[in-house]
Image (cartoon, rainbow, N blue to C red; front, side, top):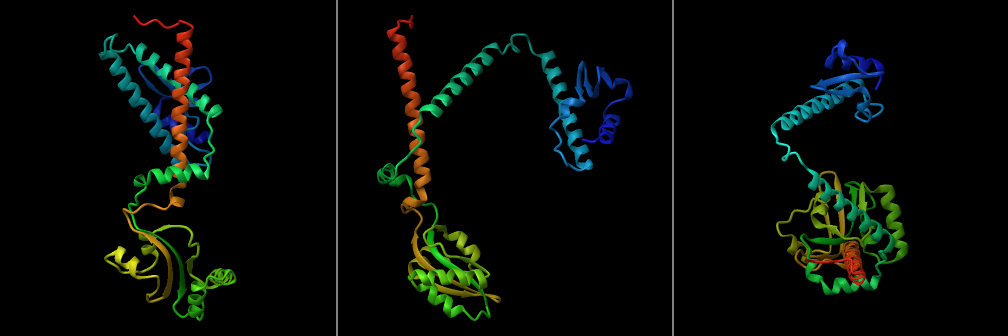
Length: 280
């Protein structure tokens, strides 16, 4: 924050007679015996922020600080000593943080994060009812061309071909001539997202998907070519390749829980052997 801006803020929030309460420190605000110093603004305004925005952010910070100190003062004057005794809560919080830090260190050092394809497949096979689709999904190719394009027929032929060379030619033509396209038919897409790109009018998505494999749509400016490779209807089982990351996360989390549980049991068992536990 530049010096002229700081001086402007000081004029707004404080009189000259209260600017020096600490040696070499400027006071920006006071609430009873609490003082807000210029150094406490560090980090409030990012470098490069416009002067006008800097002033707004700084004033907002000062106002929040003042309000908090006022409420704190009010609370301290109206609560009893016992009501302000947070010793137990602080001790419990410290203990929780200590245990959490130890568990995280243990997990970092000991947890096996590698999940094999076999483990992923086995979990998927055993828990398919946990992977039911909430929306219709499709595998497809899609090309959007200008209405007057001279390669529409060629594009349709290439999209229907399974020849690797034709796939390469299709990609090259799309790069040069298509307004928009999607050729990765191995990936699954939400059909609702497709409808945002292609002007398909349907009141029953399921019936439409069951009865269309290759289709063409037009509007006033473009031709939309779509080749549907596969689809899954909502409430059916989601494909494995859509769920792999989720399954791996689940397996890792289960391992984490098990690792922490075994650590706790080992510590308890060792303490029993050493006879350091007494329950009265």
